[in-house]
Length: 380
Image (cartoon, rainbow, N blue to C red):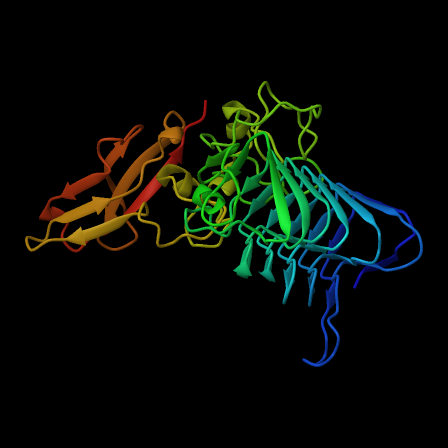
């Protein structure tokens, strides 16, 4: 463990990275060990603990992978413009387990895991405003948020679950807890809010949030800004905050989540050949190809139906299928190439807008060939 803070001692952490904190019990009969990076234990008095612009990465514990706050601590913990990622817990809260008062503002939670509450597990008064949860996973309930008790206020937040798809299970609320929705929230699966949990879907937008892979996109913390065409763009609620998690300005209508889309020109200016060819989610498909196909560059999805497929028929002709992201039109050129030896490639189809041509039948002159799709970035 990196820090233990006894309740009653007010503390502020600003602009630091807490990484590889680890506490686990030695045997199944030993007491649980909590808070891989930060443990807030019971003590005398009431205190406020604040974290501002901090990264908490790859921390692990039996409960509260990155942060654990005891229910007896009487502590209010505030996180603003922080990122918690790649942290894990065997039981509660892969990112945070909090039994006291918790406030999250413009924070990002990515690929944290736990049995309950992959992102956070809470049992006290909780406020979640303008945050991004994505790629978190739980074994039992609440990939992003598990609310065991108390009241949780949720506003202007992305809940993408473990894969941003309709099969995601982003939030769980027990019978002893309540969830209050404010403004707009972007959730991968809205029917979860209306099927047996007594939660109204008012103020909810459904869909894959379409985010950049976690990385350095400005500011001092790792973030996941929206990609062009994301349903998070310009669908948030007005706020007194004029800046996002990175300190970049809110442009006109506020976006949902921790970061603001800064416009297509800014997005294109941020991309170089290294980033275009990078594989940020580790599924073997470069960022540029995922942009062209409309697959998810933030999470592995090698079996996505939009990926390039080639099928041969009885006459040895080839039927080639690939996805199409209409939001990439204007800055991407789709190029299909074939090769007989994997060294020399010949283009046989190219388009700046292949909307009507995502299924192509190639004649048997290329029988036995190899095929690939290239996404060419068009920049002025």
